[in-house]
Length: 274
Image (cartoon, rainbow, N blue to C red):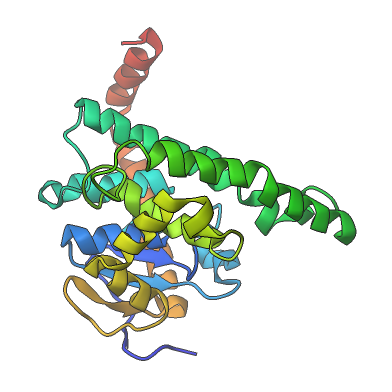
């Protein structure tokens, strides 16, 4: 069933494919902060396994940022692309600076150690087929590695300074990423008591206009506002997008065939290590 205020299956703006409750919220927050006009395409249950979506994204994951036949996946890549496209938004630091390195350090931790810490909670069946043992796995994860990751966030990612509740001094792509994932733990711990810096962070983020709007969009309120230009119906747009990507891939392949010398030169440079 289509949602109110969904738009037709055509797009010339960047389109963010997302699912409610997932870490794709980070990209939505970042796009809203960036000021870049964009649309969304919301995936419902099982949409990520549709043949058309898998043609666009073989892993069937979100977020996916789509631009006229070009596909970008993986949270860190999507967030970095958004930040680089809108340098005045201050979503990132100047490339090459010490602050830039620290931002990427935070992104690396969030995309690896922190994200994977939730796996045993969300998918205990991946570790054992027995439901009784799965419950023990979930319990052990909550009291073990996940709690350790939460403590690291509280003490080292957020606890490096007391003058700001954010990872640095204002909302950046790493903050959007942390906010999108940290909410998964709200019902697992007494956040305010066990992780006070995280609680301050969550409260500060919840007051940000971009975060408020992103949560509204995520929950299905698709009326265009600010730089958000509406949601595209998945069933129709994913077919259009798959065709456009196929055409784009064919064009790139044809270009490669026309320029074998260039490709050979590139391979030579790569193999020489320069």
